[in-house]
Image (cartoon, rainbow, N blue to C red; front, top):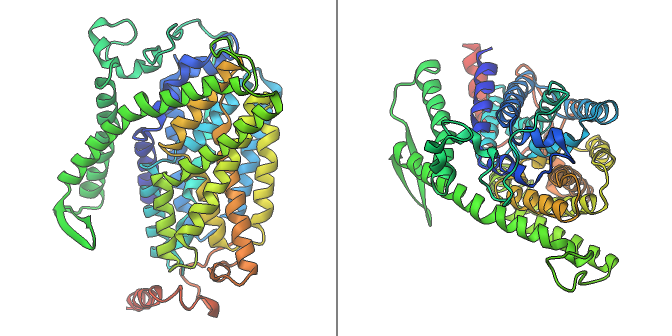
Length: 502
């Protein structure tokens, strides 16, 4: 119970610290209330409730993920069941309510929550629990990110059902289209209209307050966990890598200060750089295939040629942005290290980047053609479920987790802003949904490439997998094909067993 409680509280804390959430929170200025009233309400007056719903979803995901790993349950069946429940709930909201305008936001938030703050902590916690449970491969500790990508979707949809039938006309967006809307109410001490707090809506004060509010509670919770729950009174030292094989031991204060400064600087670049660049690009992109008053001579190409050029651009954007994602680098490095090169860092990065590129291109087509989201993501998740059946357990864990880590602080502001800008230029209700497609496609690409290499005799096929379940603490691992992968784990398990017998 203590593990589940700590994991849940940690999941809530890291979600509130995710910098990419700020992009979604400030996206309300591009949403028209008459076209998407419930979506507009959530991004304005219901913003705090939205963030709490997402945080609660991630907290529950962390607890259930730890429980799955501790009980030695594989990821295949839980992932498929969770996807089926989420898709069914989404279908019910779309068919039987008038709140379908929230679907794109809900699915995109499932991708936004797993960024550079959440992923390293969740992966490390899962791997640690897997090793403590005597699982032969620590890679079986993956899968928590998968839960954190799907469960928050259900929480957001559930929140939508409790919204009032008549949405009050409050929190209208700024006519100038800037960021000084009521979407930033959460950082203004006195609320909307408080002149004394107006400075907190300006750069760099807004980003500084947001950065401090994100990191300080998380650090305080971690120290409380270390001192009170784990009763560790030793000084916390970290090994700081200086590059070129050099490192130095340092107290925790200096790295935390660097992290705090980094988050603040990154927030400034996020709101004033990537988000605005994406909005500008998305706003003028329709000129490639449709007439825009602000772009003389538009459309620049015919409709078919212009759409094709926009789709190719979206693919290149998704592919390139994924290569720069720090969360993906963390996942790929961890997989490469724990599998001893059986699943290489290059294989993970390239297969995920191809999937994100394809998903971004499909998402762009969704906004241009104004296609509903569910008919596009259902085939993707169905294909992912089918490919999971013949795949090894470790490959399934890595593939499904890649769906969450690909949409971090680099991809999110660009993709969301481009989608919303494109939707505004085309007079669409909203431009959400691109991130959800950019999340499901990497699952398919990683599984497909992994299965192909497995058939060709690549070491990937030798990575531990035992049907739909993992080995428990009392079971022996007898797969002789995993000699290399087991090298560092067997002495540890032998020591643990001898300790248990003592």
